[in-house]
Length: 594
Image 1 (tube, helix red, strand yellow):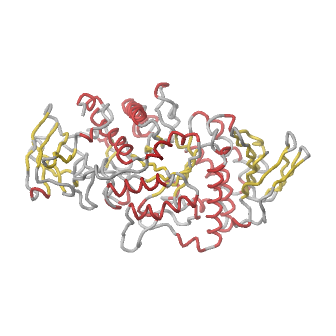
Image 2 (cartoon, helix red, strand yellow; image 1 turned 90 degrees about the horizontal axis):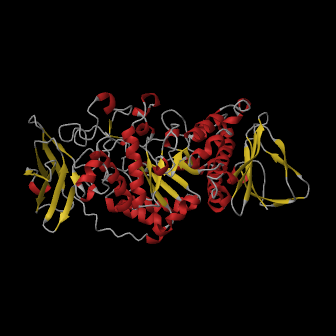
Image 3 (cartoon, helix red, strand yellow; image 1 turned 30 degrees about the horizontal axis):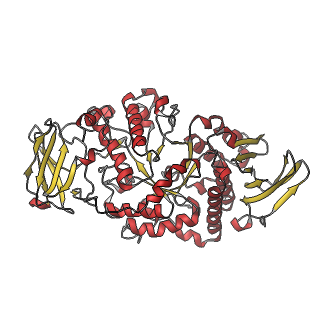
């Protein structure tokens, strides 16, 4: 490790030096704890008695080598403060950890697993210009062996069920909610104690690597939700690690946030090196294809509030980390969850941007859901909630999310948000998704949305898969499956997402009818997307520049999806310049034009 880079916040491989590393003579333990009075290693190898560590390098690092230590053994650091008190801490750089409520670190050999995904890794540079359809999921509540006893499927067991489902359902990426070890199930991983330890809930590190390897062998990318803003307050972890505020701010008003956790102090180079080493670790050692960074707005602004001003050190951390990650793994995807209006999130750092590949479009998400939650008679006044996104869309490279945050805490699921009675919700949800997949931007959908989940998500139980035994939900799933397939297969829906020539409004001035029409284009295709979000059937006149053929790709009101129209795949040739389309209530359709 380069110590100067570590202190200056430019080190990306601190985990290669710090932590527990297997040697020919046993295991060497190293930790960074400048303010500690003394430190000992305790663990299975010394019957949890103290083996003293010695200061090395500049006196801020501690080290010892233990011949009797071996992979699989548990350990902690007993750190004595300068006031004489001591506390047993998990290793911040540990590669594995005990299952909660236990908290010891575990020695782990990362050299034993052999990836077989070289062909996938060579193909990743093509991903940004193609379709990205992300299935966001919480590993412990997608499917469970039993909801009664709290068991989980292992990483490998989940892979064997999930991969066929993703392929059948038309998703080419899966995004996993945070997997760094965490003590409280209810935090969903967002309040972590282990930034190099995949949670032991689902198995060991090689189990996770096997999961990713199998996904890649089946042409499915894997994104990890990464949390660089804050960490759990458990006293065995990072908080007051060496008896002082080493990772967090020393002052309460900056040190804690609305989630009740500790904010990382990004003005310290050692903290930046810790976090960006963690980010690089997941990409290099686990072959994750990208990271979704949580709560980026809380890095840009103090406590996430614009009125408090910019956090210059945290912004610099983001720029340095993203630059360093791209230098090392150029085709890794870096995605920002950011609801602020801070400019340049997806611009290169060389242009004073933050260097992300994509930014979640929270404005699109909020406006779209508010529109579909409103009663049909209210939509004329809210018509431009669905046109506003294209006014700002080309300012950033946006990704359209309908994530876990939209189906919890009393917000209702996506299907439940739709206005009207139970049966009316389905055609509106089908129309919403048809609009979403025609809109420019990559896509993300949370698990359960695709089957019309009615119950808000809970980490305590699996998705309500029994819903598929009901014809209306089964039909909805088949609609989502076919829509996903069309999105993946037709370049017009993704190839030119971020260039103005890929999108063209045909009609965005039908306030009284709630009809919308636009074109999506690629170098070889043009698709017409038509929508009627009113509660009545309407006719719409579309003027063609010449004789054209319209091939129906999908219509949300088809009987096979629970609609009323017995559509068949057909090509309609029109010789007149004006074509009349009959649009069902709450419906949308795609036509390939030739």
